[in-house]
Image 1 (cartoon, rainbow, N blue to C red):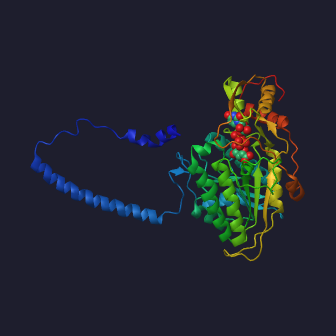
Image 2: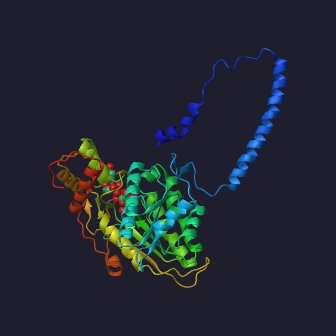
Image 3: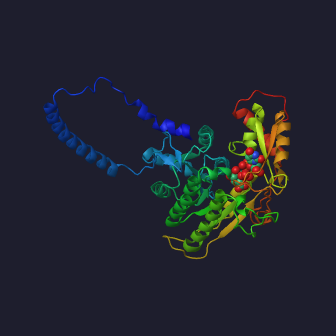
Length: 442
Ligand SMILES: O=C(O)[C@H]1O[C@H](OP(=O)(O)OP(=O)(O)OC[C@H]2O[C@@H](n3ccc(=O)[nH]c3=O)[C@H](O)[C@@H]2O)[C@H](O)[C@@H](O)[C@H]1O
């Protein structure tokens, strides 16, 4: 982050130093006269410039280009929007190719899950428009590569932030979205201690802003959004069921996801928005997030660097219900397909609207030590393991999903076990980072 800040401030270094031009004045009287006349010239010029800037400020089209997004600097990204060519791309991307198809706004489209869901929707003939702020939480080159993949699939990703109300209004004016798949979020459990503001910005303020736009549009779209397994927090009863309590979050990330669920309920209750929340359980796979353990373990193991494996306070293993991306995509599409219409119009509720919450997990937790065993086998490299006590920074000891509700209502049935899923990830990783081919079991 500090490096990024240095880049954005480097214009200060470009101001030329002009030694010799600032010699002391020999004639103080002449100097005073010059000073007064330059002062009045300065005033005239300043007023002129002020009028000039105000003129352009009020005439220019609304365009979101804040210098930072959720605490992440924007580095000269193409963050303007609007204009006929932009509108043409938006409309064309959102055009469906089958009569019964959906028209979906996917927020966080250049993210891990967003990319996979957008491509899957587009492939089956739905209209899809992406929205992403391309922040620098992790390597933006990976997000750009995903964007290229989306472009090839026919999905245009608008560069902008869900906190930009004018942009959202514009998008809803140009396209009559039937559904919003809301995946834009500040992810990561442990990072919440470093940059708490980014979680509030995206997961709370951004979510409210998006729901404001959804409730005001006519007809209102149905909303499906990403919650998280982390809402189960410190619960010890397993497997986690949607009926269990969710009032003991262990991280600010979890707290913002839980807040999102309550906010969703409010918009459902007051405005009649159809809302479906999906609690994802540690999603992994090709095009994944480099901040997640399976991803950076792979990188470090291949580089021969030590990896840190957390153990529970009782020296027990820490386990996760790792869920493969293709299973999650099926759950997302089923949630969109079964979402009922919103009931409100003109910002007013006309009747009770659907409100659902589903676990989307794999139903078989695997200890992190076993995840590392599988990676060693696939990569054919021995990991340098360092076992450390689990830090008190938001982690929980285990997660385990009960998915019977999702099975009943969405037909959700995860089919990829961790070894097969990691094999597909390792194959992608090797291709994406152009690693030399090895004799391996990929
Ligand atoms: O289900 C979710 O809702 C969340 O899933 C994911 O969180 P987690 O399950 O915590 O994934 P991840 O960080 O990959 O750690 C995996 C395991 O490795 C352990 N772990 C981690 C780091 C490390 O250095 N060592 C280690 O043992 C660690 O203790 C843990 O047991 C998403 O990141 C999050 O955005 C959210 O979507």
